[in-house]
Length: 249
Image 1 (cartoon, rainbow, N blue to C red):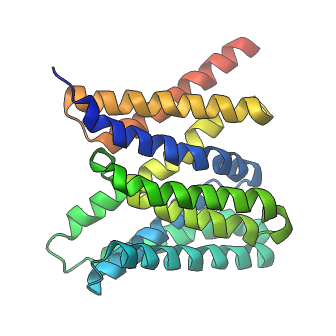
Image 2 (tube, rainbow, N blue to C red):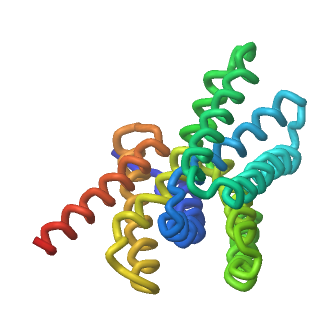
C-alpha cells in the first residue's frame, strides 16, 4: 500500500506541538492529583464550540473565542472550587465533565448532524490538519508555556488553571477531546519513575513514537487517526509500566 507521507506530515507536526505543552502539563496534573481536569476543560471548550455553531458564528476566530471563553470560565470555576472544597475537587471536576457533555447533547438534540458533530469533537480530525492551522497554535503554546514558567507559581491556582484552559482549548480544535486526554496522561503515567529533565525528554519521545505509530496504522489500515493514536499512546504507556515493574521485580 502506498502511503502519502506528505499527508501525514502536518498531522504529525500537530501531534508534536500538542505533546510539547501537554507532557509538562500532564506531569503537573498527576502531581496535583486532578487527573480528569483535562477531560473536563476539554469538554467545556467543546461546549463553547457547539454554542458558537448554534449562534451562527462561522468564523474560526469566533469559534476559538467562544471555546476559550467557555474553557476559561470552567477553569475559574475550578480555581474557586479548589479553594472552597479541596477535599472533593476531583469529584467536582468529574461532575463538570459530565455536565458539559450532557449540555452538548442537549444543544445538539434537534440538529440532524448533531451525532456527527459530537463524534468530530470527541475523536477529532487530526488527519486533516493543515500547516496553516499550526502557526497560531504554536504561537499560543509558546506564549502560554513561557508565561506559566515565569509567573505560574506566583499566581497560585489560577496560574495553572488559566494557562491549562487556553492550551486545552486550542488542542481540542486540533485533535479532539480523547486525544487531548491521552496526550496529557499517557506519557506522564508511563514514565513517572523518572524525574526532572529525563522524565520530560523521555515522555516527549514516547509520545512522538506513539503519534507516529498511530498515524501509520491509520494510513495502512484505513482507521480513524485520532482513535488509532489514542490506542497507540495507551499501548505505549502500558508497555512501559510493565517493563518498569519487571525491572523492579
